[in-house]
Image (tube, rainbow, N blue to C red; front, side, top):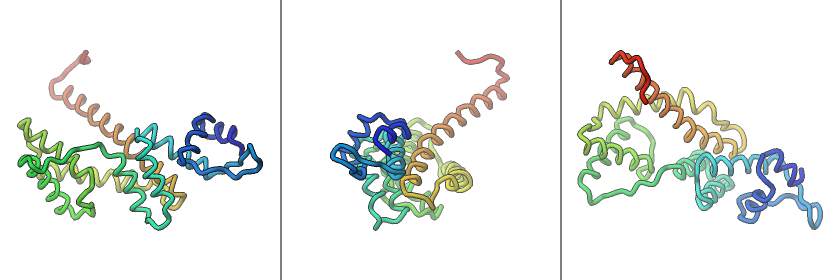
Length: 215
């Protein structure tokens, strides 16, 4: 297909496609003349992934480049490729090893991961993200106990194993698997958060017999 057809198939404007080509995010098409190239389904998949990383994941170009490099590196297994995307999506949390409260919160998280026998690297960004949340709760007088954290961990594991993992097309192209991971991580994360807020409102209404709606 020509670049105009690629644009129509992916809903990505031609100038944007040319920008991705210049940046090396999208591989060049097969040159058929001095001014014309042909593109295939691989380019469609790559554009879908780029747009997912950019529009859904809100990643900067440098981070997108790292994810795409992992996708293209055939020496990397799928776990490493997906992990590269997963870590790129993680919000930035600055560890504070000089803060005693921070160290306790991080230790609590590490104990939980060990007790659950989860295979998670020591430098996984989610460890620091969870530690920050535990630290914040503790300082607000609502400490997250080990048992409470475990209940959330068990719910998360059920959600991932029973609902999310089966949606990722592991037997297809790598781009498709990473795209699905990005959508699941970001969009389903929003769905879960929204569902919690809806449940909280429902429980509150039932407990306090509320009849109206909050302003």
